[in-house]
Image (cartoon, rainbow, N blue to C red; front, side):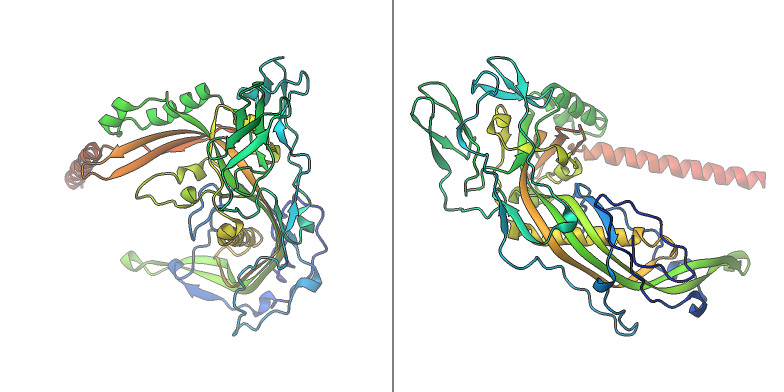
Length: 489
């Protein structure tokens, strides 16, 4: 899955790829092991040999993104794609990944239409989501059905250029949030305020009108993930989460805590497929011997290691990278709120999303996307670089003393952007501190998987008191053991 391993070094572990079979692997000329020179150093003179933790998209922080919602596969690059190895004395500088040139290719689902979304069995428009099954439920004939899959995914290995869906196109901020729909049943004109909901009921014939077609103000996404966790299940999960933290929780919070007011909300996300080419070059060390020198307090542990020039060249396929599409959620300031917990409940089963249908939103609230692709492009590129760095570590297990990458090039060849609504059960608590400052705590439940994360106000006096008691007990036990050893010796 990487370029040809160095002569004399064991090959890296085989990696499985989610994409079709990659092109044949091309060798990279590197010095043989007989040119490697042993080195002696104490263990702290080299960078840690442990690879970095697998990146996760659930909590993406600036400079330390974590795209775990993305599925990643790597394939070796063809021989024509591999440039000549740069001289060791003058390594090539890293190339920042740039978006593909040219105009975006817009995907448009022509089946979306305005007006009435009817039950396929009886024709009723009184439809809403059954959270127990994740299906749409007709309130007239009692039958359940599902919207079709969004059908936007494709072969990432063939992705080239910039592709954006209609729902991910730039927001026209001057567009009106108020849309007028003409009821196809009775001819009345009904006003829908997309700031509140993409649905309204005709005041004459009582048909439910749904704004299912994308409009330029960013109100309508391409797809959504239906709720699968009921409110009662979410309440139980939140109560269990808080119950494990009640001992150190603030007394006022414990007195006011209730899950009666939890809200089901659809949050907007950008979901991105990326086809990238990665090149990593540097120096790695493999330990050959470890021994101890000296005696007594002057004893030191040393090691011998062989040093190698290392190169890893591969194609990287990132599937369903998830990035927030709300400016409020992108602002993860821990000074005023804990909304960064939203990332901790990722990932979602994004392969099971369905085409947007406003009937899924009945009974829930939703946020409207308010950021464009260009505003999240840098964050996407940072996450792709982190994924490529992690994959390069996976492809070089032989170098147990660590690798210093001198060149880290990740070039994006193709990308596909779409917008998706993801469901969350949300509990919030506003804490007013003694100095008058306010902090908003959240407990969030992934409404598909049940993953729960949040924050609880801490009673600091109790925390400090318990810490002091533990410290005193530790000192007393230490003194007792010292006295015991003194008399026993």
